Image (cartoon, rainbow, N blue to C red; front, top):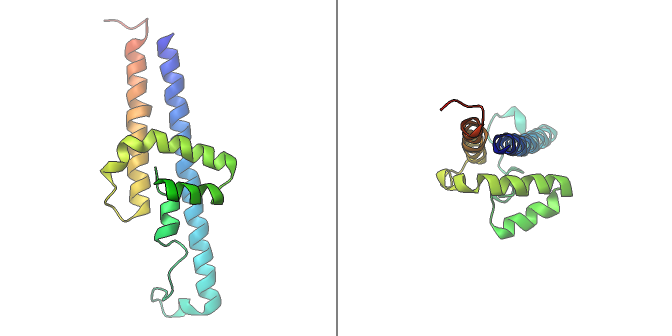
Length: 141
């Protein structure tokens, strides 16, 4: 009984973490697409140099996609995302909160999200499944 609950919890946690990361990656792709279209429209793409104006993925925008953000950033994220997306991100924030300190000094939002996602999947996906297998009543001791 307990092993079934642990396996189900592990599956649910992994689904939330993967869904949140996929939605984050989709946001980043859309942001990059908008930036590229803007550069092409302005003729800035011909020089190959980075844009002189701040890209749409600046620090404030990156913080919105940060895992487990501070309360101010959380409110900004709530205004930007829909209810379902915010529920997924809030659940993800709780799940990855033990791991955010591992990459808090990184300025790359991708590094922050990848590391916290992988650590959460390792601990809650693999680790809880191993615990479920150990707790299984049919397991030989």
